[in-house]
Image (cartoon, rainbow, N blue to C red; front, side, top):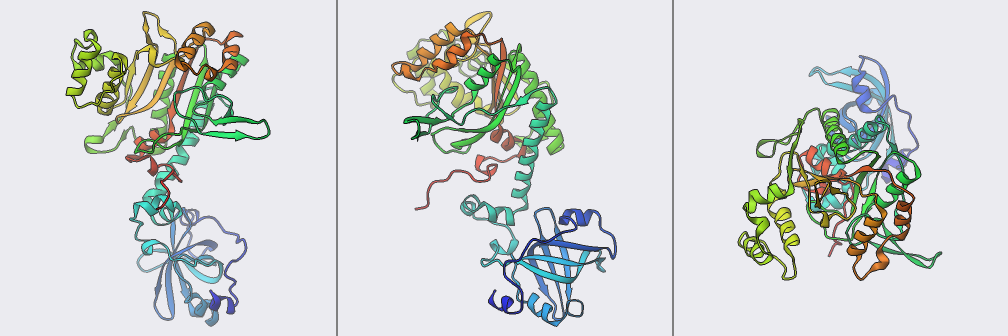
Length: 463
């Protein structure tokens, strides 16, 4: 760096006007056309009086050719001091080499930023998984596959918005800091609002605020943003995650079923170019219509047609015989749901709408018209993961108060009184749905860990 500086090349240059990014230059390649390009040096092949090199800018790679007689002795000697990782601005003309490679013949170059550390493994790919997650910039720099995953993620988010906007939904924003941690059952992150002298919670879900908007007269709303849950890290869980929540007045769970099937197939075709994702035993076919099966049908298929008639003790024994750990205080409902989550859900590889779940598990949904013990809901499961739960929303304020009070138990202060007041002003019948965006992108990208689709995932501190 000091030698380059002495030759008149400041190590950290100024803005540089480009003819376009490298992908644009390749796309519009024309022999002898003058261009200006910028990028990071990826490889250098010194041939004495000439140098071939590659630069990258995030959109493409492009070969450059530096010859002493074209740039002058001093600029050529300075170029020999460069390292891979340095950012350059280049001006010159395009030509095609004898091997047919589109190339930029350098006439002038500027040093835009000196790299003091070398790129990972000389651009052959970053193999250390720990470094990939902790220093994502190195992963993006070195791994084209990783960059493609995140480029697709960006495109998925854009297409989700376009799909919903095109169907008359409006995107809204609700509070990230909430006085009550409601809308889901999860442990919240707690903070302190000093100006008000009160604790606040990072939201675990935006549901109760979005329903307030239905009361206020917004008929079709969605929010695409972060939720926070102070729980464990796993292959499919990150404490900060992206969630899409959708609510439509005068609709129901069937309306949500139509939306999610259309949305996912649209994204798969538009961004990934196919309704078949994955390969081999993990191949998923997203072609509609998707399977629909009730919760209890699945339980009976796995645990026997007499499961419903079993006592809690007999159900406990049968579940333990299947290898499950059952807590002593669990009732039949919790034992059954453990069977579903541990033995059944993970086997549902192809898209499956699991319907009619026990109402006791879902306090914000309406009961099925033909059976008050069941909720009028579905859980969309793909590749063994819940991707999108949806409800026919409960809009009866008296029944909602009863259920939230039962859920809160001795901690009645956790009941959101303002939300219940809003319901008393009249919320229209509605369908609502949450979509785990990170999990959806995992499935469409064919990756197994949520950390592979989150740019900066949460990690345990270094020892």
